[in-house]
Length: 205
Length: 271
Image: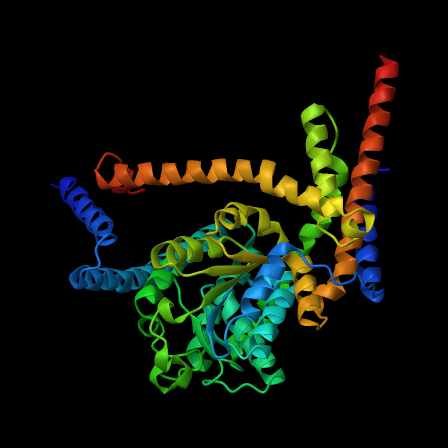
């Protein structure tokens, strides 16, 4: 029963969600609306679980003496932000938003900007014409690099067209294949879970 | 020279290239890609008073690239007397979106509540997108400032996606996919995107299939849009930096390959 009951609940939930998609009936619509509301509520609780796990993991690392300053900053951040939000709210001109705009946003932009430096360094060290495949990749990358900036039009009107061709045919074919694969995989997994074939979610940790 | 020394030279070179590029203003002319032109034409041809939803689905990290796109599109929306409903499905986009909408609305003398509203953030993107297909008021019972939705004149006639002409997702990740797959596929809501350049190719299949109406992509897309609305901004200013950075990377690739082939020739000669 410990195994069977969750599988039955999972099957019913999956089947209801599957069937309601095709039904415009008011009952189906109201069931769907209620499920969406519950979804939001469950999500709020999963956030709590996430925060608890994050704090627990950091405290564990501190007790082991690993990266103590960084872990303390992480814990201070996760405690400070809710306190600021509770005291002053999260709207415009609140302390919470001040910290977001003047600390978090610049820090994130800084870290993201570092990517340019790593790309430059990696392009020097890693982008080598070692064999035919690598040479084709290299040539394509160079064309797209030039084609995505305005000087491409100045060099030749065919340059942007060539870039679009690369994006629209070879690149997109590969993307489509991946997307179709993901779609079929998701569908198969969903059916396996709904029909109770896939039960790994029952095993816990 | 040690690998660390070479890395420092590359980093210093990039820093110099980007910094100097911002000191030089070069007009690259008024070029526009078909996608940007399509986005512009669509908004341009909407009747005055039409409602569009602008969703700020991005993090603060991508602001330098995303903001010029959002700003150009918002300026076009307000200039065309369209009525934007701002939302954010990414917590970090909330304050950014609100400030941006307020600032742009101020340029055109638009009034909050009547000409535009900002509903704020809603967690769990998929549930929020699906929920808005049933009732936007249910998902956002009050706006970002805490005003009940009943007190916002603009929201009086807006029930769900049927009353929204276009959803414009300003994103730096895969969140626009949720708009396409849930608002688009389930409710037939047209979706347009403002994306970082790195994300454009991910959306090409959706664009080609028509599931995504159009894309304004990267700093170049922003520059093109600015050119179309006749108002230069961050996109145009950043074009020189982006161009020189791309050229710098190309030069690095070429130098890297020269070193590679030289070392290969030398090792071949020794053997």
